[in-house]
Length: 440
Image (cartoon, rainbow, N blue to C red):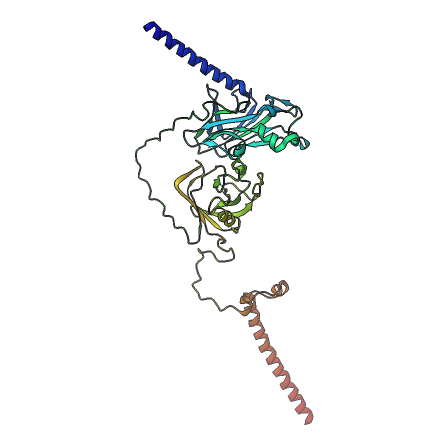
């Protein structure tokens, strides 16, 4: 009996091993080209910006944010005709599989995109863009979807949407490069378990592996400063807690810590305001606003170091978002936008962070005296009519002396008039005397 049980256990282990091997082999056989970077650049030339990446033993890759605008670029193609990646046949099934997770809130940006060859793009020498946001929102081509994972049928999309216009005669296409964006505070990381184009529309275990959530660091309680009391003016647009450096989705908002990295966050269909810090804490002045209208390469020419960008997307399915977008677009330069609870060095927003502004109002008019100016101790003279009346035209304005000069001219004229009067009287007296003498 013991021998039978032992043999049964061995057989079960063997069968289990064979099942795991066959499943792994089946998935490996279905993978045409991995889109993830390799440690030694064997899968394409890798360039990183404000992040680090580690290739793990299980084939996954972990990306860690080290600064604003964290991104990775992998180039699979060299030149125009030599491709590093294997070609896939779109009519025999071409599925993009992705699976990622984080222990501390980091994520892949919705602007992550893989570029691939397409016939209708040959004329201008470009390649097509496959966006992560498209794969997560175009549900009619999804074979699987969930939180951080999915299978998207690129082959069905090309056959249905592009047909002969987009598909090469031999049906063979290749991925050429990848722009991967990582979103989260400095120090956070996301692990990508799968990211490839394959021939299978089903993958076992997709989305089942996730990193364990990190335990928050326990530190001795410190005397914290009292929370800032937020007084939101009547009629203000209150956007609530706006995340930092996160991709825009339907009816959402984001604050971009640096105008130079706006394109990382899918802001091309949003209204954006360039904000500059003022001397007052938590207050930013509007430098310019722009409705991007589908342009993902726009940058504010007026941007300076320390500026940030507030981006608002409007959609009828999200209550109030259209009104918020329109109100931001209409903000005049000089308007004040208040942001409380933000750290743009660590790229964090506190749980009780808030962003608000009063629509359609500009800041202090530069022509008005500043509040710091103290009134003169001596009473001012009543202004002349010319000072209070509007100037008709430039020529009149140029010929009119300043108020100080006008006072001097009036005093001099009075003296001259008196002297002239005295002289005239003297002349008259002399003439009278002469006439009298002649009569005698």
